[in-house]
Image (cartoon, rainbow, N blue to C red; front, top):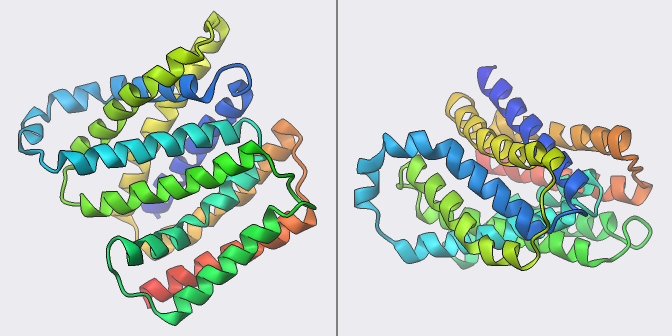
Amino acid sequence: MSGGAWLLADMGLILCAQSIVKHLGLEYSSGQLVFFRALTGLVVMLPWILVSVDLFRRVDRLPLHLVRVAASTIALTAGFYAIARLPLALITVVNFTRPILTMVMAVVILREMIGPRRWIAAAIAFAGVVVAVSPGSVAFSWALLALLCAAFFGTGAIIITRLLNDVPTVVMMTFYTAGLTLLVLPLALRSWTPVTLADMAPLLAIGICAQVAQLCFLKAHRLASAGFLSVLSYLSLPLSASVGYFVFGEVLSFEFLAGAALIMASALWTVRRQLS
């Protein structure tokens, strides 16, 4: 059960970071928020980087690392923009489509073979997205488009990570945080808003929560099976819906709940097929 505890810690920290982004996202640009998140994460990682210097001498495939960082930068910037403007539960539900997007990209990029049952699951998930974001549930906006963009590019970054699965964790995370800091800096400077003293601690907390969450996620997957963690991860939906309702006053429509049920059923079926 220790692996499950680590995953619950990961979900709690991510939800904490998202809540801060939602609270501050209309005061500061998404680029500025991502910059603080990345820079803080890099500082948190610095001791680990310093004791692992030897691992960086054997780094290769730099173009692939750069593409991964670019995809992650787009995903995180678009995601932060969406979090500030959309219900937290909707953010979580659309993120549940990532296993399906991963499957499709694995066919196109990794040339993996996918059976008909998983294509059916993908169709069900797509139908769920259409229902969940229908006009009766969520009004179309740039934020919704940004959320879908974040899911697409975030999944692309995962696919590239598969191609780099032999790279040490500290190297992968350093490229991610350092590259993210550099790439998003021009965007942050373009729309920079002076930071008040009261907001400094929450801004730093975004990066600390996100970086520690990554470590909790990795720890969870070392201690528990993928099947158990995949099922447990669905607790993130009621958690995010609860925070959205009690903290931000977000009420979910019937259409949204129906679409969410389709997406979750599809993703659960996909996980079962992968493990069977």
